[in-house]
Image (cartoon, rainbow, N blue to C red):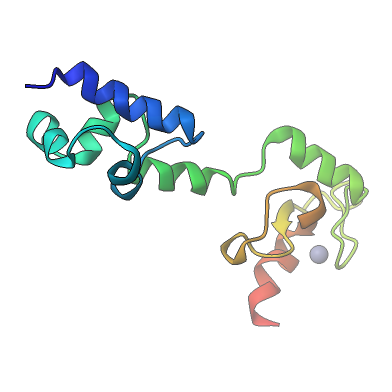
Length: 135
Ligand SMILES: [Zn+2]
């Protein structure tokens, strides 16, 4: 019987070697020392083994990717500053109209591969932002 620590250590070894947050079964089949079956027997599934090894499961990886969409406070400020704290479409600004709420918008949508970086972000007021899809 292979000790469970060895199984986990081998997962971590591969994750570190390929600088990955997780290890797919496919990758493991190619580079791992043990049979995938061992992980199922010992941990009751691949995802459980990944969790035990402190690696990300497929679901958690997805959640991390989703988080990349979020604009942090520092980046938000940077974008607002770049756009002079005004809506880039209509020029509305909370400085002159207290009812204006500014949003940070992805120019190339995140769902289409747009990154959450200053160059791909713009300031829109809530009206322009929500009206975007129906124009
Ligand atoms: Zn606007």
